[in-house]
Length: 271
Ligand SMILES: NC(=O)c1ccc[n+]([C@@H]2O[C@H](COP(=O)([O-])OP(=O)(O)OC[C@H]3O[C@@H](n4cnc5c(N)ncnc54)[C@H](OP(=O)(O)O)[C@@H]3O)[C@@H](O)[C@H]2O)c1
Image (tube, rainbow, N blue to C red; front, side, top):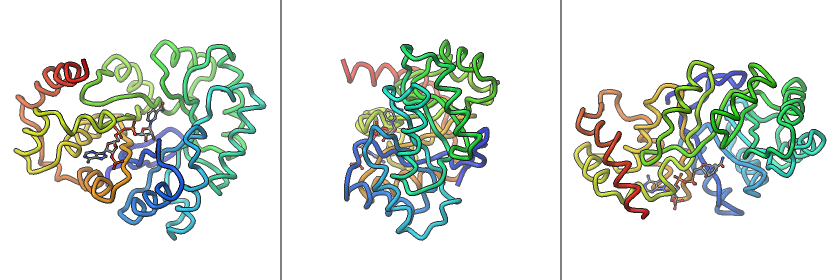
């Protein structure tokens, strides 16, 4: 397993399980399988309405809570200080845990002063209810404001990032400041697996396209990825892809494809 250091959150597996759209028994089942397969990083949010199921799956798995990196997110309607504290407490109750490893502001909400929300999150950090604090869907300009309001607080920014989506400027800003980028929708919500060029590269390496797409992300400095998967087949492929021998480097041609054609291919496939 590959790890990355998250400010405050410690050594974190670079590949986590995304859980958006997983509900009820499907969610409990997928998280249990994931933990059995060796996943130790789970991403949820109050918005996903599945924290209770994730808590149940963790409790039933027998895996020590301390071994699992759990992220949740506060929704934008709870960004006033008192609401943020209540939302975090509710998430902890639902997850059946005393703390989360990472607590994120789910989306920017400029109608609430950033300093107010960050103040509440810093209080939760001090109280030991979150080990690290971060943002999600924050562009560079907003990260700058967050850093100005609370220097050293922001550990991560969770953003849409995959082979069809450039995040170069954000990465250039985040890396020197020790902010880890968490790539959400790393498989383009499943669509990347159907791209002809990716299928061709995957065939050449004897892998599946999803594994190549994830590998491309987690080989980058300061990047984690949280693919969602419900099926055992996908859960297994994704975690096995993470453990591909480090010798499987991409050729220059493939890197060029990743940097250019694939992005255009992806965009034109969505046009
Ligand atoms: N912060 C935010 O605003 C935000 C926004 C969106 C997402 N997220 C987080 O990021 C996570 C991942 O993003 P996402 O759910 O949008 O999309 P994604 O992870 O890019 O794609 C998930 C889809 O890909 C399929 N899949 C998984 N592994 C595969 C493989 N190896 N080969 C082919 N297909 C595969 C899944 O199928 P099955 O499920 O059928 O196995 C599912 O349909 C979310 O679950 C959530 O935790 C955060």
